[in-house]
Length: 100
Image (cartoon, rainbow, N blue to C red):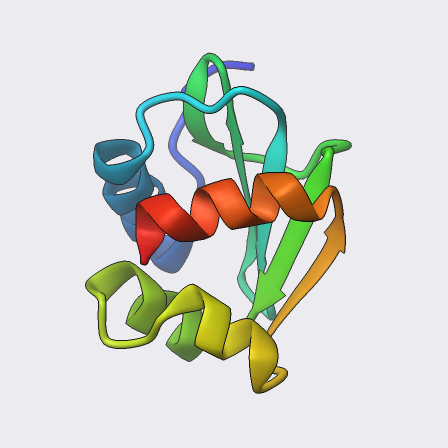
């Protein structure tokens, strides 16, 4: 669980942005950015990684960037099929409230 930067600039930028919005999280969440990699969020913070999670949210880099920038509401992204959620929906909703 080291904080070593990944070799992917998209993942690194997303980790930095998420760390500002979600410094810690009560649970384990994984954001999968299609074609780029994955980001883990838990009580220790945000990091690049692909581990087991209570909830996994999957989206394209474009959708993920739009959510982080506030251009797209996470709930709308989910309802339109641009963001998929697998696992604990209550944790996904907590993240959506923080990111939205």
